[in-house]
Each structure stands twice: as structure tokens, then as C-alpha cells.
Image (tube, rainbow, N blue to C red; front, side, top):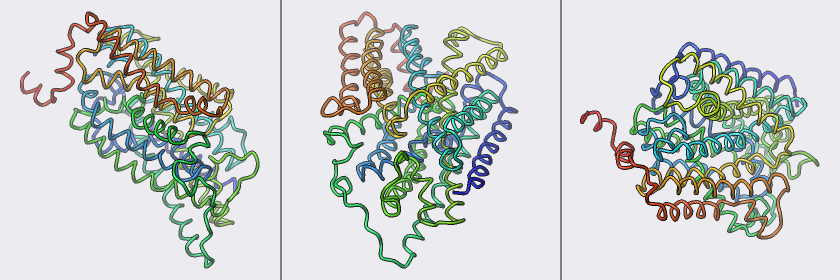
Length: 508
């Protein structure tokens, strides 16, 4: 593999990212600019930015590696990732925007009128954000090592430095511009090599090779992550991905940047189309990998398949150039997702640790901006250190665990908070605690001890199917048992969440 090509591609992506971020610095001056880009982002630009940050290491490299290793059942991953936005559109997109909040913690406090619930939400935002950042930083190290041979820590460090520079420079305004551009960079970087490789496959003049005939490539529900009880694992995975999207802090913060609830819904519809277009391509790499790389060398991660495949299909300069293009696209994925996660975690750290509640701060934007920049540094340093200490368990697998925690905590809070008037402060807190504790324990065992056999392995490796219902049931039962702890201004808050902005304006 030509190291020079890969270095040039990665350097170009990092340079473009920094240049665009520097442009955003000129536009960011106020608290609103740094947190929600002044709430003026158009639906199409916001959709591109969401696509940029949502299509992470798991999407660019992990799905192809899973399809390559475990077969066609892995197509449930892109299906679940996309379905999550449909659920988000139907249930919470518009109410979230109308809440007027800056972060998930703000929404929790506004709806439940409780600092305790806010603190729980803040801790969960930071935890989910850091858990999701781990595979981005590990994936960056994997990509750089594959194309250049550099040590694994270098790639993660590069991503961390570029992300901190961009987030600290211009906050959400900078990141919105960066992520909107990077979606199209990623789409081009994965689509163009895919078409070239398909052309080479169909045009090489030899009979079409046969895809491996292992069981998971022939029968459905037989190969999900190599686990036992695949039917359970598949449906649990779909629940995690479909309901976890609404609990991802870097996704939800984007809906606060829309001008109104109608724009939030239009944004979500556009996101579904953009994600569907991108996810046409990663499975192709998994299938072609079975054709041209029926086995990888010992110790080589399947997540590196996308970067290795061009050299196997087209040895020489063309293959090396395509690998470099893919490496640049992969780094764009790491940078854009890590940027969104960092800004969402930094917002919570700045508000709840460095400054106190935003609702009690009415001025001094310069102080807020300085605190935000310090928070951005803290938001990336901790997961980078953890990425060097924790052994990778697969990019898509790690991301799916983050989805499971998000679905078990914020999904009940948001759905019940937006649609159920009887949700009490104690019920919301109990749901967050129970769902968060159970999902976090399952994730901890899976990451630290590795996959287990039998039902324990299935239940801990894919916990969403039981942790989500338990969290919902806990919040509902406790709320019914504590009617006196329903917030005083619930009726007024619910009207705000569900009244269109133009109607509210007309009546004002």
C-alpha cells in the first residue's frame, strides 16, 4: 500500500476541516452561536450536517466488516440506523425544537422542573457521548495504521486535536459547516471506489467468483455477531438502533438549531433520504471482500476490510489511490462524528460543571465561550485516554452498545415527557436510574469480559430488548404511584411542546 497517498488524503481532509472551522469562527460570538448556531440552520444544511455526524466509524468501516464476517444479517445495522430517524420524526423532533432547550439536560429540567433529573440527564449525556467517542478514536488509529503503518495512538490523537480546534474555534456554527461538507465528502469517498471495484469485478473477463457458502451467508437470523439465540439478538439490536437514535446527544442537539418545529420535521425527512443513499455502499464492500479476500491475515481486524479491498481487487497504483480516497473518507467520518459528540458533551460540562445552570446566566457571552472551550478539551481528553486502555471490541459493536444505553434512558424520558402528562419527577428519575444502570452494567461486562456463551451472552451483548421495557415500566409505575410529584406547570409545558410556532406567535 502506498503510504504517501494515504498521508496526502488524510492531511487534505484535516486541512479542509480546519479551514472550514476557521471560517465558522468569524460567525460565532454569542452563547446561542456556540450552542445552537443561532437557531438559524436551514433544513437541507442541517440534514447534511446530521448525516455528516451520524455516519460514524461504524457506518464507514464497521458495517462492511460485519457483513464480511457474519453475513447478510448485518444489514439490520443500516436498517436500524435509518429507522431510528423515522421514529425520531414521528415522536419527538418537533416537540424538542419547541422546547427552546440548548441540551438534553435543559429539556429534562424544563419538562420535569427538577434539578435532580437534570443532573441525571447530564451524567448520562456525558457517559453516552464518551462511550460513542471511543470507537471513533480507535477507528482513526486503525485507519491510519492500515494506510501508513503509524502506531494506533497517532490516529486518535490527530482526530482529538482537530476536533478540539474546531469546536473551540466556533462551536456549533463551525461544526455545522464542517459536518455538512463532510457528509458529501464521505458519500463521494465511499461511492466512487465502490463503482470502480464493481466495474473491475464485472469486467475482469473471468467467471463471477462465488461468495463464501458459510451458514450465515445462506440463512437469515443465523449470524448476528456470532452470538447464540440470533432471533432475540436481531430484534434486540433493532430496538436499540430504532429507539436509541432519539437518545444520542449529538443527534438531538441538532434539532435545537432549526428555526422552528416544521423545519425540524423537514430536516428529519431529508436525513432519512441521505442515510438511505449512503448505506447502499458499505454492504457492497463486505460482499466484495468475501470474493477477493476470503480470509484476512491473523491479527487483522475486519474493520480494516474497506481500506484493504482496493489493493486486492486492483493491485498497483489504482488500488492504492482508491485506498487513499477511502482513508480520507474514513477520517472525515471520525472527525465529523467526534465533533458532534464533543460539542454535545462540552455543552453539558460547561453548563453543569463549569458554570452552573444556563437558565440562571443571562449575560457575559465571553465568559460562556471561554468556559465552553475548556469544556471541549475535557470532553475529548477522557475518551482518548480510555481508547488507549480499552481493547477494541469492533466499531459497530461498540456503537450498538452506546445505542442500547441511549435507548434505555433517554427514549423513555423523551417519549413520556413529550406525550404523557402524568410523568412525575420521581418516575422520570427512577426510569433514568434503572435503565441507565442495567444497560451500563451490560455494556461494561461485554466490553471488559468479552462475549459470553448462551443466554447470558445474548442478554448482555444485546440488552435493549429487556432494558428498554424495564425502564419504561419503572417510569410509568413510579409516576402513577407518586401523583403528587407531577410538575406544577406540566399543562403549560405540554402546550408549548405541541403548539406550532406560527400559531403561538399569532396568539402572542
